Length: 428
Ligand code: ATP
Ligand code: MG
Image (cartoon, rainbow, N blue to C red; front, side, top):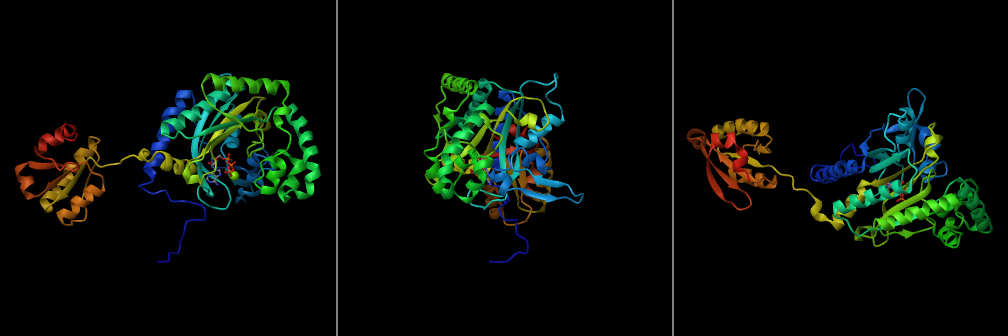
């Protein structure tokens, strides 16, 4: 193999033509669907003040403890590439005072774009990856929670991905957390020596993190831990009951997993994951969409005491799933008509016709290599062209050419002027 001097950084990908079509179609589904639920696009910076994430995503989360791409810029500011979308979106919401009376409530936004986490690259796990996400800010209603979940599920439905399960849990409000923290620490203390190093340091800082540990032994210990659902305050219990009732009303099936806590510290009340056990994921359930409520986050970033909820989904993982579950999703990108030329007269004519067709919004292309006609036609087929036309001195002089349909090899004689005047009449 040839050795090139420059390689893309570890954990990044080049998304090339041939792959980009699926990305763009997927993004198109988001742009069509999310506004129907009242969400509008937002684009926030790809880097923020380090503390936007460190103080708000949580200093005991894997993301902040281990995965941040942070550095000092030339002005000595501590900067981080965004590891997730919520904190920056809430920062923008607060800084632009989008909570003011002139703005819609809830304030609903969605985004798509790259996120950065320093982790060990593997299938579906990169250092620069892409997320599609949404946030409903200034919202604290079980209806909004269920609407967000319904939108995510509808999105998967439109992609043709159906084998999914929805898992929900409640992390409760502050009162719940205080009660549960004590119960959890009491339970875990006797196992202290057996816990992983990460869990030892997290036990007193944020014992919920221990529930989320990926260490096998931690998981065994945690299996018998008290359930957070037994510590729910009256408000949180009632809230969760309503969420479940509304899911039932919409006919949305779900499982409850009281051990699920999710990886970010800002979550409160309703949290959820949409999971798939598709073959590409090796038979075990993998999360393809995760989200939840964050009722303290807006005020923590300097805004009013308001609730919010959102989700994020990894596009790379989604594409793996899509390839497995609905390979037909891949769009056929194609040239409508391709010109092959037999000589320089034909080539000159092709060049001019090409421009006229493109001005009429027709996807047209020609050969630029001056290769044999047979090879040019092969090139047309490789381009997924629907039709091709061979042009030469004869066609240039007579003003008549043969339009060939690639799929059926059907041929028709067409007057070139007529064709250029109304190409869609011929390109069916
Ligand atoms: P995991 O447990 O798999 O590390 P997470 O809890 O860190 O996931 P979230 O922070 O909830 O994930 O992010 C939401 C989604 O973003 C994930 O479900 C996944 O699809 C995607 N994602 C997270 N990290 C990466 C990564 N390094 N590369 C690709 N996709 C990722
Ligand atoms: Mg992770």
